[in-house]
Length: 319
Image 1 (cartoon, rainbow, N blue to C red):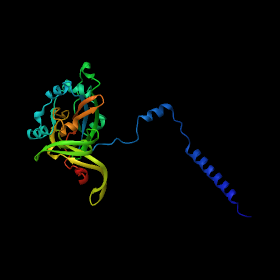
Image 2: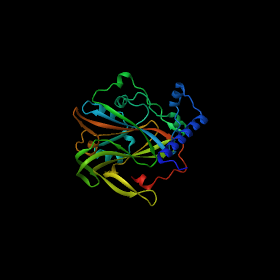
Image 3: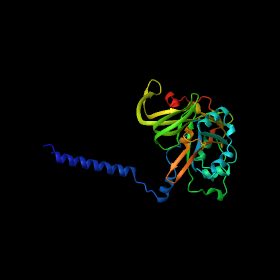
Image 4: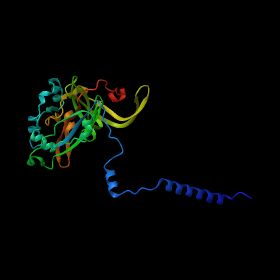
């Protein structure tokens, strides 16, 4: 008796495979899923919630656009405490067209209008409670007649979780094709021109005793074309760094120690045309000129500072 041909062998293999599938189905059985069971499964993810790092904190970042000539800016800064910023820091900021201050306690009505604050928006409070974090009290509601804003005002809001010592960037402006800037530093007043420049606030946070955190903000300009570089990584390894050149204004570093609920407000002196602060916060759009207000609100901190903070890779902490 001869061996079956190729076509016959293929048919035999197919029959064997079909028989194996049927046997598996009979042995395992079938399950009927009711619609109610399917709906209940949608609300329960099989994935465990991600727990934040024990040395992390959370901030709300608001960027609001204000009209230029309605007196709102002056009214706002009368309610913002600029004296809580060190005098030496305020002097350097003022020479370069920046303003900075702290808001504590009740949010002023004018600021609540600009930020469109109605109630606290703290995501996932159960996760925060499980990690023993101190959460800021809800932002107080404002009267209904103060919430409506003119079309000239708009605001964006972003929730950020920061790891202690790690750099995070807030991109403040659009990209300027050409940006001539006047800079006033220890060498005096001088000008500099940047191509394809964007204003960025680099922020870092440090945990402090008594449920406080120090937020450090450094202005920088990222400019030019994107480049690929090799940078120091973790240990003996190198990593690819795809970024643009940056001009970091270390002398304008703004440190602010905050408690949950307090706000660091950043803006500009409207009269300082051509200054660095002007270019960070000025807005020129088809519907008219205006300026940006950047507000960083400390929202969550750990109840206790971890004894052994995890070490950040050098490249990550210095970037």
